[in-house]
Length: 110
Picture 1 (cartoon, rainbow, N blue to C red):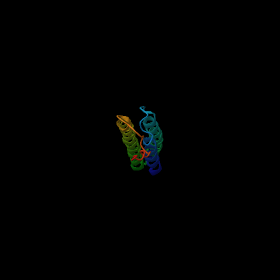
Picture 2: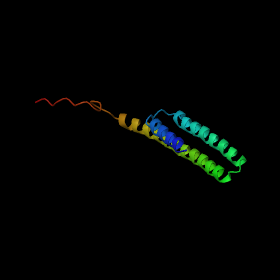
Picture 3: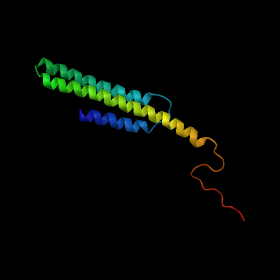
């Protein structure tokens, strides 16, 4: 369980660094993976229920739900980072005159 949440969080952080693409592919990958992990947990919970281990089954179902919720929050963060990156790109290039960022201006002549 902890590995699943760690993967979802790590994937979200890595993919959010790729913001500004204007698409939802990264966010979709996070939610799709988490959904697969959660489905596996739910299947295991069903097996536990069949064996009469209701408490363990319930705990696993709650973990599956938490995995999905975490992925949704991560996906929202990726989408927000994407929008923010687009805004930064348009602001940083608007009205640029003279040397580009990261280069030194020519020394004044006397």
